[in-house]
Length: 115
Length: 114
Image 1 (cartoon, each protein chain N blue to C red):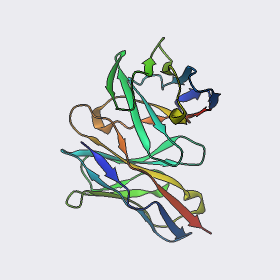
Image 2 (image 1 turned 90 degrees about the vertical axis):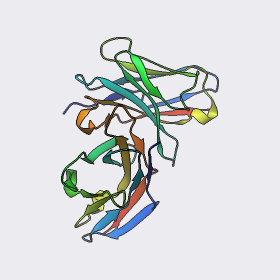
Image 3 (image 1 turned 120 degrees about the horizontal axis):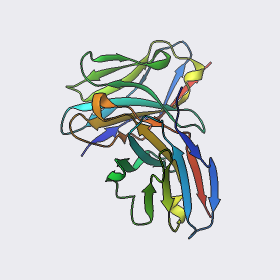
């Protein structure tokens, strides 16, 4: 069964450092997303991406964040200068389309710990 | 704006008993509704969705959910709980029309005791 894969599974970084989280969405999917989940809290939307541009972003997704699809398979989330409060589990997701309530398929997550 | 409420932080049920995990939603149009499950240290797994049609939706692992438009609810149910059902359950909503993000509730921990 096709799946979304994410790397790394866990990254520890110092405050102020840049972090890149990588995702390989399901191959025929067209919509890509990043969500995050701070420990013990709800799953929060960060950004969605379609046709090589951001479709929508939340208030969390400020200038410190960026997304990119550098090739035909990877979808990355970059945090330029990490803060302590960026510590969270980051989930990548993809969906085939928007029609018929297209469900999102999530990766296993990348746990980011900022010290 | 769209939102989802899961009023219970935790639901406890004995194995073999029926379970219900509650969800209510608020949207300014017709909703798509979803349930996802998260096992420890894992990603979110899709369980079921409501698009249109029958109000009772059947999904994976014997789970079902009932859409109630008048009560704006989409409660998750299972006739007979298993210990292996113990996990964190998230209800989510998105709008029918146009483009909208998937908005999650805060999650409900389901604990099934042997």
